[in-house]
Length: 456
Ligand code: PNW
Image (cartoon, rainbow, N blue to C red; front, side, top):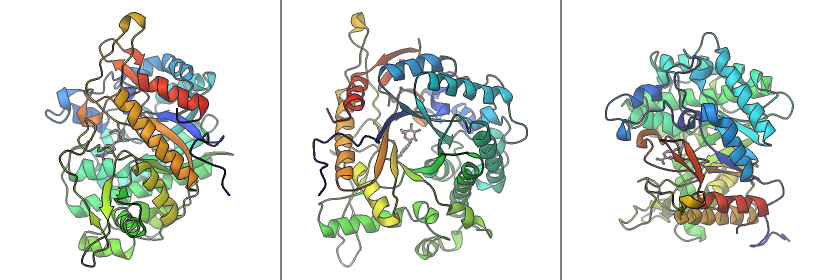
């Protein structure tokens, strides 16, 4: 019988961490030879980003990483998920690597090591070199070939500093939102066939990332994908609603999670897309389906699903207008999302190691108060979000779901893509005018969770 109860500490090996991404915090957008990214271009396109905010300075982490890691260490953070900026390493996407870019990350990893913080490195978190977009971006195999070289270079270069690798962050966001809806860079609105092809190219890059880590990562290296799967939560936790939620989950994630677990696209997917199916070349699925060591899940929200009527396999419910949400319009507050997403992945695909690679919430108005005593932000809304989600992670572990770690998004307020600097996701407040950092109440709360390994 399991001795893991409601009040048990998280398992000793459970990883608590924080996350951020290169483009959102580094700044130094045109320094030391870094090339233009599609987000640098998108931000300068009128009307695309709130306030016309760009990534030029962001949190100036490029120049302040040492102080940021000291702050992390003071909060007891021992694991940090970051990403490497592709255009800092290959300013033109491919060609010759930029030594100054490589040197920067060596300095950064050295500082992390000095502060006792383990890196979890994402190879691609949306900052595609603009030079590759000019050659077709995610619609083209040129990007796949360039990514393969980039992944080889980065894994070889940092094999002694980095053991935990994540290939790509949230394929949906840089394909569907970037090439179908156009709300994210590069802001294109393409046909279904083109969009399906961008998914396929992204999957191939994931495969190349896995291959590169196996080939060059050295002993002890592990690798996985970070996916923001569409998450369903059963309206009642009864067999009928759970089965319906599972059927919905399988359906909505067929083109990505389904694909990496198959030797080809599922027939149900091919039936759905018909003539818009992506072009698949021989050997593609040898890469796409390479076994990984873990699955990364970014979980923020979910759709409620119940058993279908009239022979339908499920019914997904639209949320009523009064349903609570964060200031991000898509971020409906559904803590059970973080219970069901890993459980479904475990049950449907057999994952044996799952990391929550992001979870957090964004709000606009978070004033710094009590400045005379060093300052704080009373973000009880975030403390609540965090606590409710951690409870569900804990419940999942108690139910035998293999969740091995949790990374909070985000360490610090940063560039929230098309929402610019207006939307704050950090547990550390950033004053973008002065670059002053102020830990929020939620940072103190999370520090106590990490210290005691319990939900305080
Ligand atoms: C993630 N949605 O993006 C990204 O990985 C982060 O870079 C980002 O800052 C964070 O979550 C907060 O937004 C998402 O529309 C963007 O469902 C949009 C969605 C989900 C995740």
